[in-house]
Length: 336
Length: 271
Image (tube, rainbow over all chains, first blue to last red):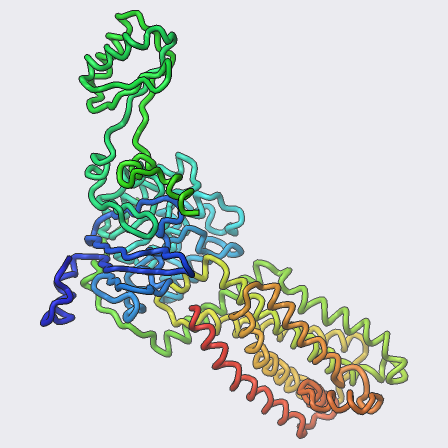
């Protein structure tokens, strides 16, 4: 815990001390009826970082984000954005953030250019600058050609990009992205990742929520795992993955008779304990991928035929299994 | 993709309030947005374009002979009545669209921007005066085509139009309140029309008051819309400003005095 509440620490001094933190939250609580959607979240996001908020649907990710973005009033605790209180200094906080919500936060009936120009005008830019920055952003997000089309003709990926572009007009030092790739196809998803990475190189802090472990792993410098409104783990993606374990190698055998021999070869070559969850399936933790070549050669030399080789990466479920002893789905089932 | 380095959050000097000038600017931008949306979805204007045309035609030929002896004699009485009915009904849209807007994702973005909290509401109210203007223009144009020649000339018609638009704007605060507090857009529409239907029909818009039974006559004479209709008739047909003009004016001001604070307070709690 930081000593921010200790007497004698003036607000200005405190602000200077926390200036390197983009977001600082203590005991955030939000209650909807009988549901404690966010139940005492502490959060420290260093300036300039990409920070991932990982959790299943309904874990409280969006609710937390909305409180930090001044869209929801916390029922308890407090949050600071670059040292400014999100409740008392909401209008300052709003000048420091860009928010891209889960659902299109742009006007469907207007064109991409009109949307951006209106947001830019609202941010106080004169008409000409508003047009210029709208043009620049459309170009940067590869939307120039679609600039004068109404949004109803946009694909999901284009809409997300426009949504993100709209959040960047004021060049905010802190950007909130609520599930930026949910529902996107793999190619568009990779593009969005690239965009997010390049945003971080401009010095912006990015706080994103996601349901995907690999997304948090790919993008985030630090990850907080949230479940039932509580933070269950926090750290770098590597620290997180080490609690989960490594990817698992899966070998599907042609004949069940070879199972015992295959198991023995896997254990001797990889030097780990292998398992036989099904009659023709051998699985083993894959700590060192380089030894897989050797393993496959040994298997061929032993005259064992494989029908399938695959690698199973740890999923969000594995994280929850490791952290809470239950999968996300089980947790959900237990709740309802 | 390139972008210049951004200014770090801790190095920015910012104020925690929005100036009056900026608030007005924000509201005008929101009004501009409202007008753009009308341009992009012209079907929104069906009510203000079709209603004056249809109602004026229908009521004139239906009631003209029976009430005024002839279609031509009925027009000076009917046109101001139809005008007020149409424009006031149009003001319901303010509430309906406000509700629709507040339910959309884009409203969250407005709330996350450092703009005056009141701007989306103010913008909607400003943009809607354009709808009232269109409805007014079409009603008078329709009347003119059917042979209505206001005795007071263009000046009277203009002043009459302005007071109708002003009155509709004042009334739209009521529907804006419904829009802010209601759960769905269709409920706003439903409640608003339930109130407006008796108000517009139980007035002196279509029939002379002295033909009504005493209890109804009482209601019609206290109905604020009757005073507004009389005021516009006097302006357009005689070019005179009477007590009804000032009554309407005062009534409209009263509505704003009561409903603007209520609406703003309800709205700010959600914005």
